[in-house]
Length: 528
Image (cartoon, rainbow, N blue to C red):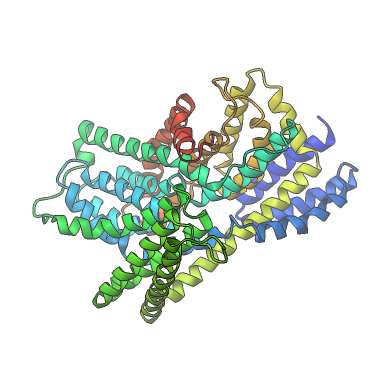
């Protein structure tokens, strides 16, 4: 082993040790990078001029149009948490399914999937469902392990069901990796891979994973009825109007955000702004029901604008505008005025009710944390490459005897193990840029050309496990913070293990049936 290879391996080992000691992630990565850059320079295996690329990379991160969607999606998730949509959903679904064995656990999974499609924020979903559902499940006689595992697993669906921060980050990283891989093979005009492709590819696997969670709930209810009993007598019936009132607002939000992305009406960043506006309306509508008709009119204006944008060319300054397009532009301008008026009213209501200020503060804190970690991870990966780590990884992956199948398995296992120690952002910005260009040049296990969408979905499901597996899964810590005293940490850890196994099973399902991830993007965008 050469000196530079030893330093590359040492970087990962030192970073993991320092993280386990409790130091902040971003500063750990940056500090480790500085230390090994100086050590490599002293040993004459690192060129310090390599670091001159760092300012340009940081500037690229801050001006990346895809990453602009991060604060918008974060705002959307935090605002939705404060709008009490999750509370109403859990209560209504619990009453709807509670009379059957395992019904409350099934309700938690369904609500988790719906909130995932609305927000994509794991922490907010786990905390909200932990506060609202865990006491009820324990009061009904649920096994604490099953109850805590169900809530933690349902909360992590926000990392695979779009829109999701993991998918946004992976989409950006994989787009660069795919360009590098194609260019190195002589294709200087490759097809691009976008976040929209990854959103479309992850939708069906995410829903299948939620279905597997429900299947497990049903199996437990059959095999061990005492672990997930039905609701006690006296639970009130739920009416169709109550179900519609609980479901329609989040479903409308999903249709506006995810639908506009999948059908090409808006980019992820534009759709995130639509989602942020939608959550403002939901929050205001919950707190000022006497103004509901104004907010409904605003929702209608938003829906009509999206529908018109998808079917009519309303670009200004064109010389060939038809009469129909002229009328559409005027109507769109009036709808925009109505939308702006409704949003100003919603902002006023949320600010008056002391909701908007804490939401903006929390959004700022989370966004700052995300971008600080991204900058630290970029610094770390730059030094790693300067020490020859990228070439070392490529050389070892290409030399594996099992070809592309074994190379993918090695990378997946490495990501899974790193999930015990580091966050998904560090893995996405350190491991993926190094390994993905090598993997994307290899064929898929079935011999066809490697699909970046399939690889991205496979990685996102793998990264989802980093939120779940003990002892450092973030979802487990979130749940521990809000769990009642009678729920022990061992209950949370043991309850999470079956769902981690289900996530690993989902990786095998994707391996055997890649079309689960590639069919919808191919149908919508004719992409792989």
